[in-house]
Image (cartoon, rainbow, N blue to C red; front, side, top):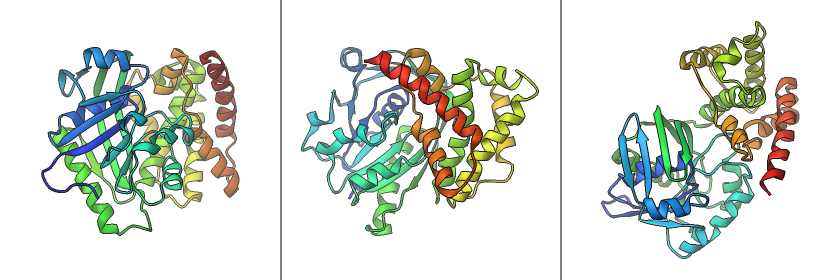
Length: 326
């Protein structure tokens, strides 16, 4: 189980993109943490210069994780109390296979990704481990390898993905210990008793804004004012995802679609991570954001014509991006 005394806690952070780098910054500020990061495309820059972050909330900092590695296998045999997964869920199952050498029976996974169903591949591969699921409301970008820009958006919602084979008290202890690291790191977070409603709410948001901005090449504000049909279309799309969530037994708040539209209006100029991935020629997170709700809808007899249309179109775009990346 995770250390609960004042001793050091070994943490592996997997996925050092913009969001992963932000959490690396937070964890690095927690004195108890010995942080190992897995860096790929930005490995050389991070080894040479560290991670440089400019944050409206935290100021400007340059820091160096304790260890920077290219693959988890370089840390094989080392025991990590927490494995924080902030990699993009482009391939939800395949992407976690490299973690095998660093997972022990006492490792707790912390999943900080967009989408729904993200926990399932972890539970299937490592059925005896604790999984903490997180919903990320953090605005960050990485315009240059190792250079991070963080906006004022900063909230993480955490909750357990309960493991019936483990004592609840053990899982609660592991969650509580992890939250002490976020507290020490000075970031805003909440712990919720049920994380799935929060995950589905974020997916309702992401399905609309990520898909629409990516396919129309417009920011959210421009889309909402593009025609009299834009807002009704968006609310119907969100309503389809809400219906799927409810069919899955996840109850979302009344009037959520309208609330999310108004929240987006208040943000003004808003471009999305999926839009940024397409512009940069990177494969996008289609499956966990759109694919899972589409398949759940089909399984449960929920009609999702608007959602399915966007999903099919984005699959075509993703295939082209994947071909260009080879």
